[in-house]
Image (cartoon, rainbow, N blue to C red):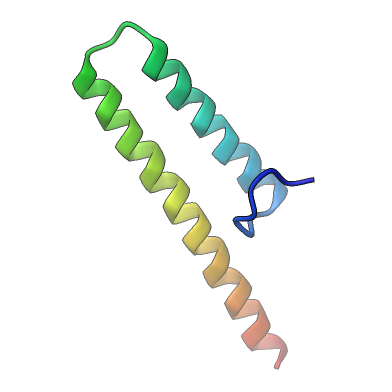
Length: 66
């Protein structure tokens, strides 16, 4: 069962969920705002790159089948 329909495999889903948990803990922690924003941008970029790379790999596999 998948919570998000990003087209990711199980390992990628676990990594994305881990990144989200790290971000939530960082937002609730007592660090400076600039570090919270930086961590948020890094997590968002990693999740975006993971989903894009997963879609590219799926398209390449479909292209190789045909």
